[in-house]
Length: 319
Image (cartoon, rainbow, N blue to C red; front, side, top):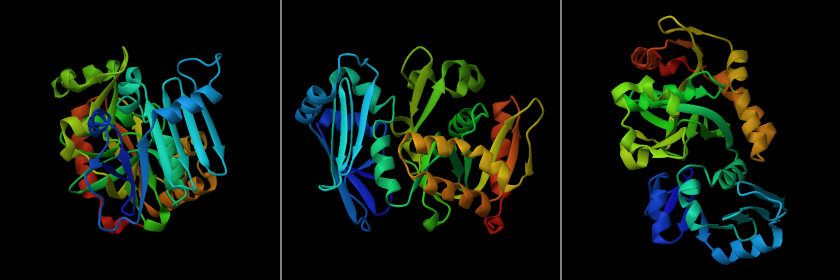
């Protein structure tokens, strides 16, 4: 199966059928690449490599949730107690392995290939951006990931009301290609305390439970038609919660840059080029109109307000 990262870059995943079937519920896999694909990186299932690296690098002092990450001149490797992922520059090839008891944890409940994605895409000029991206036929907007601003709840509300999603948390942007965003994980991450907010729009039977408080809604499994892997962005929405009806105001680039600050932390955490991240953030806040959007506690009211606001933004407003 192939995992198309951008129009020109794809990963060919070679693994047991059971692994591919699990991946299909959480990734947008294809039976072939696009005509314009220029580079294919093979990602192959390999238990022998896992055993070799585990014996060499794993220490008794490490816990079950610990990971060992090492970068070198020829790529990187990431190993945990039951998980392995590496990439070699010289062979342009990658290997992975996941033990049976961790299949759901790594293939559904987490982003197991984030390290590989950042490593490959960053070197092609794409920077990871911490933001949700939502939209419809009227266009798409990005919602930077400022903590506790309502980003994830807003993304879930949008999808449960029939809207489209590119990402609820992380995407990739290359300033050389304009305001196009790329998403790769078609899922919503929800916490149990938010369930009452969605009312009967959220069917809990369609969620996969990670632990007592975290749940995943897999778009590829439930509503694949509402996921889009690439979208052109019309504006930046900086969310703020308050007790009144929804409203908005157009704000300056510095506000947008402050909301995008978590992207820099994410970039650093994943070993990406911080200079490229700053360049991308500056590009976004100077090229796109920025709206401070104040949301109410009523999710339905917020949805209709956002739907009308997105529709009202003329693409010609782009600076």
